[in-house]
Image 1 (cartoon, rainbow, N blue to C red):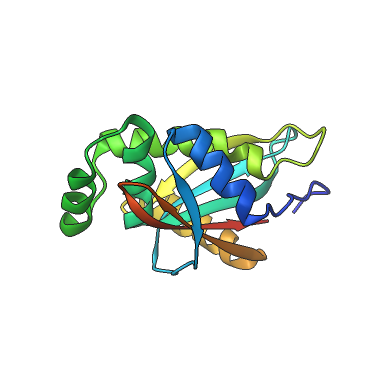
Image 2 (cartoon, rainbow, N blue to C red):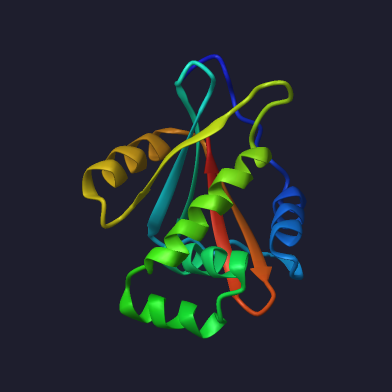
Length: 155
């Protein structure tokens, strides 16, 4: 890890960002941790990985769907199929990109470097190993119409 350390946000900051991003009611809930499906890596200006965000399949699909108001039933179908559709994966990438604001220390520019999903074995395994080596916090929140989400932030 570099000298840059991420700031762990308060759950209220996470819910407020999601509320503003989706234009939906978002409330805090207890985090329910499930196996990770999507992992985002954030880098400082020197290209060093300094933070991670991750979530399970259901949360990945819910966040991706909520961004562009994809019908909630599509989330249920994707979870039942055990795979995230490409359009939801693209939307989740944007959610992760905007969520950098949750962890960037004041005056430090962080950027989303890459996102790995469980079906991208090499990238996913590398990111999962790095995430598991870092200190992490889980955030639970409920997005109106889409359901309960659990986001892990580590750095």
